Image 1 (tube, rainbow, N blue to C red):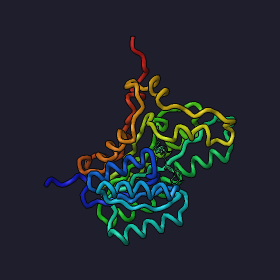
Image 2 (cartoon, rainbow, N blue to C red; image 1 turned 120 degrees about the vertical axis):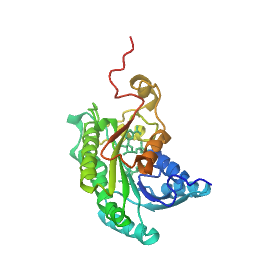
Image 3 (cartoon, helix red, strand yellow; image 1 turned 180 degrees about the vertical axis):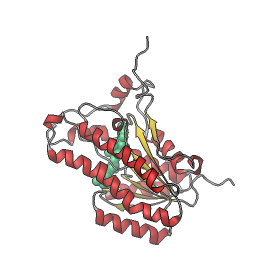
Image 4 (cartoon, rainbow, N blue to C red; image 1 turned 135 degrees about the vertical axis):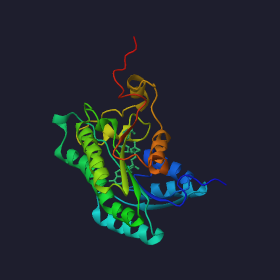
Length: 265
Ligand SMILES: NC(=O)c1ccc[n+]([C@@H]2O[C@H](COP(=O)([O-])OP(=O)(O)OC[C@H]3O[C@@H](n4cnc5c(N)ncnc54)[C@H](O)[C@@H]3O)[C@@H](O)[C@H]2O)c1
């Protein structure tokens, strides 16, 4: 029997209850990883882990707010105690709060950065030591195409994802050769985040949810929104030994949305 790509590896995934995080969890577990799933929604992340176990995968779940440093200390210690190793991190938990910049409250700006930037900092701070003790590791930080170019109405989100992009490159230099660090930049992926983007803003004034299919149809040359599995396959490759010489890159998975102008004469 051929060995699965991630057989014997332990990978922690944040924001893993739903969407891209859950897609990554399923794909990595299918390739033999033991996946440690965490999410602020404790009940839902338990269900995700149960469904992976139901399909024969190895998964455990923990309730966790990525902005809570004390919880990070507990989870990192539990993982090392239970498994004696940590091989990978997918720092995926993130939120989007949409509002025109002059209408955005300071509280919404800070909330965006607390989860998307400080949460990613804490994810790395508390898992990279375990990977160093393991001897090697691969870290994937979930950025966005909005972290590579501006996004009207999403300035806080875009700024936070741009921070993740350069944070990742800095870590790739600082922790090479033992740890590889890469950022993934999804385009328009069909998840629940699109319904939450306007609704979560303090000043949203009841704006309608955004429709990823409609946006992708206009802005992505492949004319469809992506699926969580489209992103998970990129993450799987970055966590595997097949990408052993790849660190410090930005992997864009966006249906050619950022390739240039979408104009066909
Ligand atoms: N869907 C897209 O089009 C898209 C595009 C680019 C980037 N991204 C990024 O991908 C990542 C996943 O997004 P998604 O589309 O799957 O969204 P989603 O809303 O479906 O899932 C996000 C998950 O993160 C969890 N979460 C939120 N705040 C948390 C916190 N403080 N601590 C722990 N968990 C928390 C949520 O409970 C949820 O399960 C995010 O970082 C997002 O910014 C998504």
